[in-house]
Image (tube, rainbow, N blue to C red; front, side, top):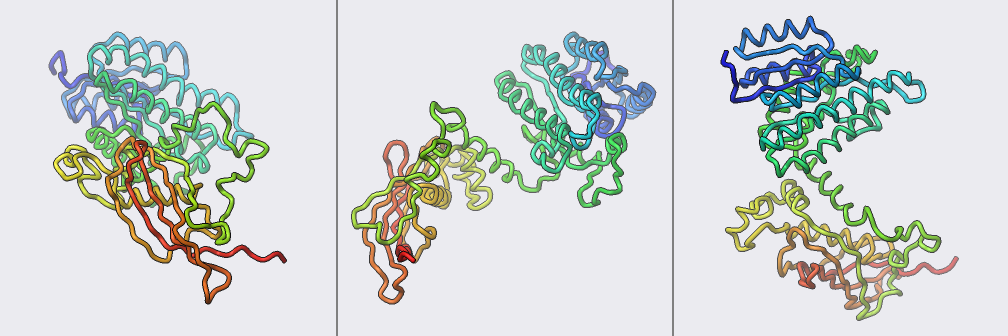
Length: 422
């Protein structure tokens, strides 16, 4: 065994069994020396001996209970002082405590100390060194319950939601410094955590239960692919992109200088949302929608699912096409136009029901574009055979923030007539 390892040393918490032990094995297989951290020193020694024998790496045991301040401080100090440690796997955690109303407060405190406090302090201990060296890796083990708190223990899912948000924020902070950051969100995984939480693992459907080896292998593959968030069982990463895009879409409206109209006394029914009947439409009448901003994640997420062409998925490839850069699919623009019209721009009573039309895209919508829809009534004619409705011809023009048209839609709509008073 050499005195130094160019792959660096990985410190793995909760390494005595389950996910942590598999991480230790896989990282040793990749040539990393190891510092193994857990409460069970005997099991750690057995694991360390096996890893030394099988992979020829250094494997040191650091027995510690991370819910105990003196032990936590020892591990923190090691992360601060040992320049050889380039990877931290924040795996140690404790399972759910059941409904909050019947939870033991001391067990809740232990859960928060291990799942939240230890994760945060250990990451904070290693980050300054990694920033200076401009490299390194931090892997935080969260859970799919961070995204589905309705089906998990109240405190446990909350703690894992913290780990996810913490990792996402840390990723933004570390990106300029060359430090890799990953949150791993396992689903149900066959480990001892179930027994420790008092749950019979046999009650979990086999189709939902993943082996720890497969879970860790998938997580490390996600790390190699540069993923910030890895959900090992998720078949289509575009689903995560859609969720991220929807979250980012909230951004411009999360902090404003006034409350939304619906929270004001006179805002229960918005003027823009008043249903329009045929009698309300007149030739030349214009209706304006609200606005929304398009970003790169949204464009790529839509394209992966519905229009997987290179100029919607890859900025570099798109530059060589007639688009000259990443562009939204026309059908994505059409879908956003429909959303804007439905939300506020064309509140037809009974909904927007088409009876034919034409669509064109004079120029593509691009990342950063803020879209609005202006609709003009060209004609509104009562039906001769159906006295309860009519046909309205409407031209809706979707424009970007510069006033450039990115879509023109001329459509015939079936519009109900206003019901007669009873």
